Image (cartoon, rainbow, N blue to C red; front, side):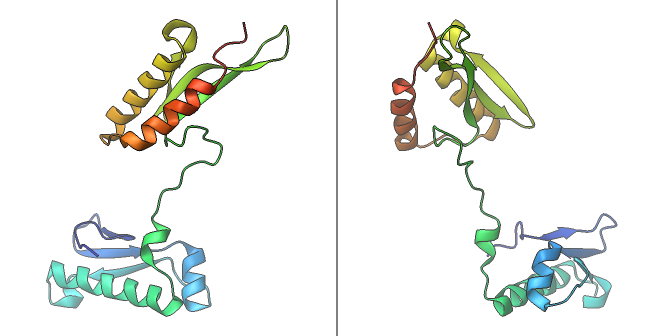
Length: 166
């Protein structure tokens, strides 16, 4: 595990120690009792050395996880929403229902950019182009392109969807 960005460990705002923060459910699982969800490792207690206090925090965290038989990585893993039909995280369709026949169709594609959804209308761009615009917006927000394999699979699904209720 790299010490560049340790999971669950942050530098204190006063800049004189490190704080190990674990969700209460994990502390209960680790120790079998209610414990504080924050444990502070002060630089002064470790010879005034910033790196020694960080090493102590990482060592304590790793001991807790090992004692409970858990791995750190699965707890930090992002998972896709099971309702996402494309398989691309952050790119979702918006549905409308036709008033004439009750047919449900995709009217827009959304790209999640932060806490907001950026819409791309199918009526203006067309079905595939609206989807691709949403993909590009999501990629530019996250600074991580989707893999070609995932993009091709999603595009095949999108091309099979009904684009409008007309």
